[in-house]
Image (cartoon, rainbow, N blue to C red; front, side, top):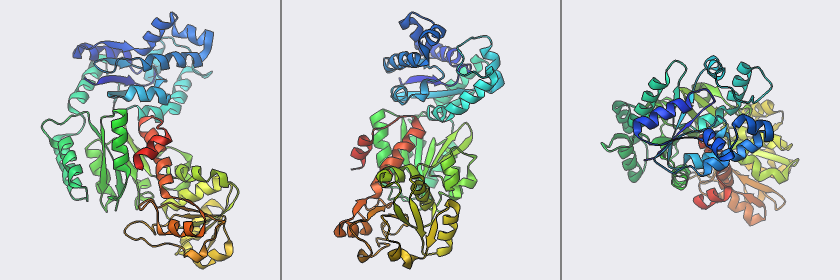
Length: 463
């Protein structure tokens, strides 16, 4: 039986609910805080007082790394999930349940359970501040979540058992979702897998779904990568294609089956902003595009990891002169990355008005397409779909390139686009769209699961 792991802030009921679930399932129960005290021979307040939080976290990491692999219920400390090493251990072959409660409820519970303060703030303010700081980690730690504000531990335990035994979606919802998937271009073997996950009499109610939302998106490498990572880290998830021209249909189907989240691609990166409850980070707000959506506790939360995938391969070009081709959603992420590297950026687009509008947003220049040759950039970034299968054109002619340029094509299917091929013939340094895919997928996986996958692992899996 999979290990059952409870996460959440202190005072949300992890120990009490975990003990009751363990009793009902006739499984042993382990509280990682209690295990730290047992192994160290000291109370947690004493460890904090004598050696500080850093030493406590080291004890916590050691304890979590040696937990039984299955047939056990585990309650974790409130900050355990902020450590990617812990998350890698906790998530293996486990079903993870996040417990939450409102600030006032947590405060009242903690008044009876003294613990070392985490800040110098008054208790209620500390709870609000720390929960806010950790909320992305808490979202990442959750396969299922439950608000314990208005429930007793006994009632909460029963709710958890229902989630474990039945999941969240109803048979009708899963049938509707399967009909949606059948309208897309999902390969037959992948569709058969979805049928088993959603409607088979022997289905596992704990299996969760993720996917890529776009139109078209059947060319995406994401399902192959994610499903390989799920096998590697023993995560009970399946990643598929949510391909449809209507964003509303995609979101409705994802929520019907209680999907963990979505990777978002063209043409929905901008449109989806109006459909989500909150944007988690400054970058996504500035860019005006979201490529990662997490569904958590009834909310839809948006992130942008594209800009990080564009920025990292260009770090050595900081301060150079750059031309950005295109003015769509991924172009906004690109200009954010380029300006973050203090580059002198000019945006060129077939529709000059769009280039001008994007340039105004970021305080850079714009120009018409035929001005490219006069700019003489050090770096060229293609953020247009030109070159993407089946439209395998190059946005620039070979004679417009010179060997002093660095050419970065954000298109990754095919891996070597006509633009990259022409740039290599001229002698340019080239960066393929696979680099964006590797970097942004690594960050996206961290957002979804709190696991920091080594870059070499992702490269190996997409090779």
